[in-house]
Length: 358
Image 1 (cartoon, rainbow, N blue to C red):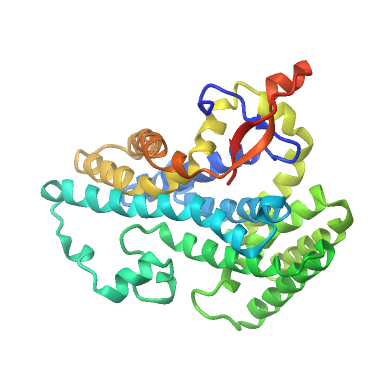
Image 2: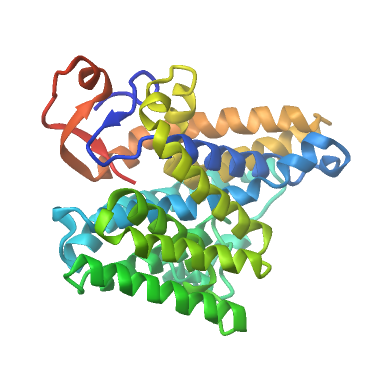
């Protein structure tokens, strides 16, 4: 497998390579947030106030995920709900378990140095069951072990709903069903008919990516995609919060970037951002235990906000690279028949080169 830091993004007929760059931006913004959010002077500098909005990076991930999962639904290897869920489970869940082990190990190793205690980790059986099943958003245990896990709980529900949609075998009817679900979610959120922790909370942010995929990649269903985008845009006009506006902005950016995908993917200047996007799942899973603790050490040394930000990103990315190599890469879901970008430009097709999917 090519190393993400030295090779251009892999080209396939329907792969939207610029999404890796968006993933990189999203992941870095979240890491920066967790690197400075405990700094006592963070609100006293312009940089600090900007970085404190980094939590919105999660809402860049949601539409990207919606696009990628909708793309996965349209591939032959995911034709049935069972096959779709098995591939999603392999891609997401083992690295999630590995990150739990990593978080526990990091807490134990740093225990003598951070004036902490293990009481937050001595959870009862129901609490551990909620964490292991990614259902902690329905319990008081949300935020335990790692504060970023809450978004994976919603992703799990999105996958389940998309798997059920695969029971509708005719693509156009399936697109219509997803549009109807989006309209129902918009109505529920407008009227306040929500259940804490249920997928409806963030379905519209996720559905924006579905709309983008249908518009760009499925000519026969593109008007269903347009309907989804319009429904979500109308909710923004009705007073959506900043987080959801970020998701809408990401969807619009995806529509624009699709036109320049080849040029962006070939850019050497953007190569580091693509590389971060390539390991963004690992970075998302493991940055808090290292970046957060590095920030706490630097704060005790009276380091300024920018030092905490730089150090947090550096140690977070380094740790994510190690975690990717040791854990995540073993669970990538591969596709066949890919064409590397350089070969495509020279007219040479490299058949059978694998690439990862999100």
